[in-house]
Length: 375
Image 1 (cartoon, rainbow, N blue to C red):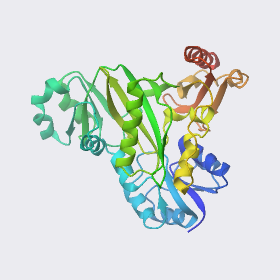
Image 2: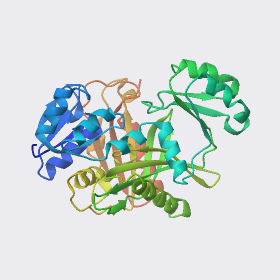
Image 3: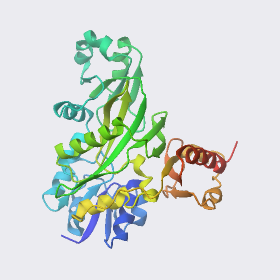
Image 4: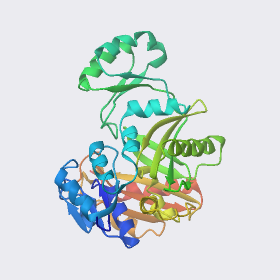
């Protein structure tokens, strides 16, 4: 067993984990098949192999004392292989629950945590079996139980008659059908839990999605019963999972009721603002939980912060004018080092801080539009 810290997955979340670990004095190893991955580019060692490659997993275990994940869909068998040899946090069981929407929804129900009305669709017989629940479940969204993200693997359905065709279009794989509830708000809570049970939460964050992809996150949300309830639910989920690490919990607010949408067993896109406006970023917190260090303060360092994603669409007419962001004292530009800009691909994000939320939000939107070249 080595003394490095490892991460399975080479995206931008892994990149920030690597940088946080290195800042704390640790050597780092990334297991990721893409040799041009953002995390692999900055790690001390990059194992270029499939996530379930036994030789690669053995090498990872030989080099590292502890390993974490940066996305929710690593093969659970690979995590179990590592857990027999070294520390793996979060646990394979926690990741398995979060990566399967069927298990995730049932886990919430079992723990008396409210979710939107749903049904599990595993085969065509299940399609027929829920006909008598049509009034309760539609309009709805059909999501593959595994692997879908950022609006992928999903179909919106106006009524029951569309369900069979949508299930077939998604490949007849197990799915979860969720009622489309009217949204008052969308928010997320990021909770960190240590191996000793110590828990902290960051300020609940308001989120705006466009075409199923996170566009804008802002914090704090004015104090309300809903945000405090969201903190408590996130903590309950972390404790029920016996979770160690950083957990992102997404919520819908519908008719004044708080509903869990999904969990992410790793840092979350909506928590990127913590890099520039919290005393301890979510990525440093991930490192601390992994190695058993005390958790850091989650206090905000600015009264208001807004994070906006930079998708590949903004490169359609040339490189953005990043100098505008670099010269703005309230702004922090983050680029992920991805080799090619593609529509819908997260290439980076822009964080803007200030004193008053409406002004910060307007400033952030104006700055993002200003750096984007026109047609």
